[in-house]
Image 1 (cartoon, rainbow, N blue to C red):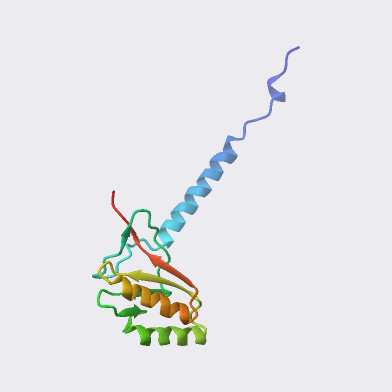
Image 2 (cartoon, rainbow, N blue to C red):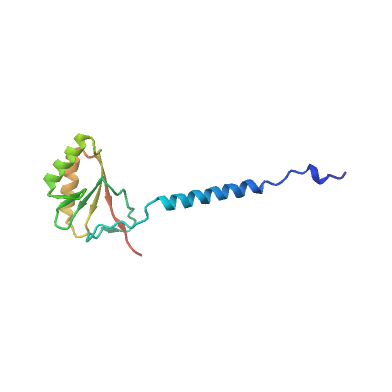
Length: 136
């Protein structure tokens, strides 16, 4: 028995091509609308670890500088004053309990531990330390 060519199902390659086109258009859209810039902190050198993973950056980021001063949203203060400012921002509802800490490589470990302890006592329970992956 012979099967005619008209009874075979047509291939659906056109649908696959349309899907690929849509995916590429979305990729181009997201590349054009996103911000592509390197994260810079001026003269800050991040701590390097073997398997470090960068965390969030932005308004929840507190910078610990080499001299022990803290910077948040462009405001530079000592530890106690900064913790009070962060608590006030949290009470006002402009900040939640999640913070990211960017510590300068040259900052002392006791200063970092003091910062983490003070933030923990102030009610900031979700703290992330941002590091830089070591070059291999």
